[in-house]
Length: 450
Image (cartoon, rainbow, N blue to C red; front, side, top):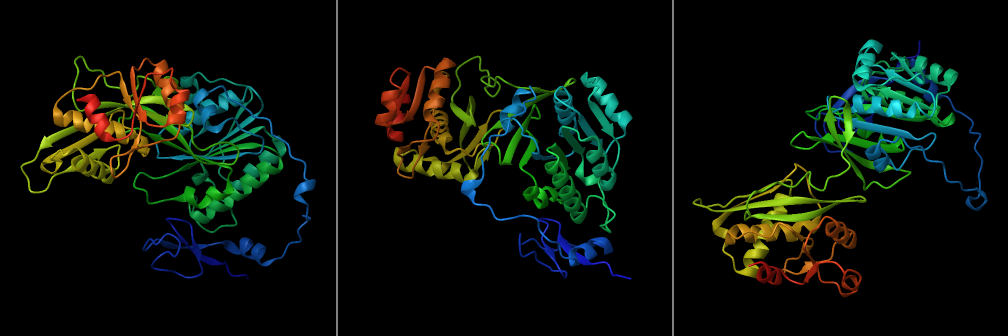
């Protein structure tokens, strides 16, 4: 009898080895290797050779064609994906309970208006999915539920019914008899994903595959199968838990710059189309330590409030604490301000925060952060119709940033009166009709504000 092949897989990245290793050569994590048996069917299949039917083709002789886009009508989903194409494999991941199943059921309802949708509900019974659908007001004759976890049965159903769309919720529940390990293990996850993606692509079926990331981060299954799919989405929550943010980390058919915002309601995830006031605090009176920054998420521009508290310290070591910002960046900008503006910040604790619970990595927020810091130190408020856009160098110079023109135009539409931007002569000629205030150095900013 043929002996089952044994491999060792890293839980963190999916790296395979023929023997147990203490440290993963791929991700450098320790004690993450676990033993799995591939089973005699897979071992036999791997040993056999196959004859490829593919042939060489000159790239010049291949006719190019733009695939038609399929839109759901759910604005934030379409914004992130830019529409889907036939045969596209989409992987959506996120923590348990974040709203993946709810969002996918809404997507299934929209797609059922254009063709047959098979929803493989491996985690829940069909009755449970039906109850959620009734709560969301979803009723469709083209949406079919299939409560199954065996990959062979799912593949046979796909080939017989040939739906236009397939949804798998979730990949962790599927299993193949060729793999002698439990459902959700890395070998099972990759085997099942490989079969589903290949079958759907051969039949031009758009597939949406749900997978989980545990809250403690111990299983990184999605990382091991990202290369098998066309698009990788991640659904997360802001720190306040008000919004669900859909981001894309890989997309072979569209840009990865976009982000979609949803609000969780009893009727499901509702697109948050207008974010112009969602992340701004409402102050009855002018306050110091606050400045406005124009955030750029793909094609969307919306203002955020940067708050800074500068407090005299009685300790030997001052604190630099930031929420939604890089702590090291805050410490660097504080040093630049102290050096260039001669402000004794080495005796002050500095706390910075981005309202709305978003994490900002864009360097264009530097100017707003410095403005709020100076405002808190001087205890003088900044006009709430002033906005600051610009990166700051170590010598205090203001550097150009991406999407500056689009940010200025959107801010002017929102009624902002003073828009501080980096000095750029060519850019200023195009923005002369807008209320921009070009500055070259933080000294100019300090003199202009205080």
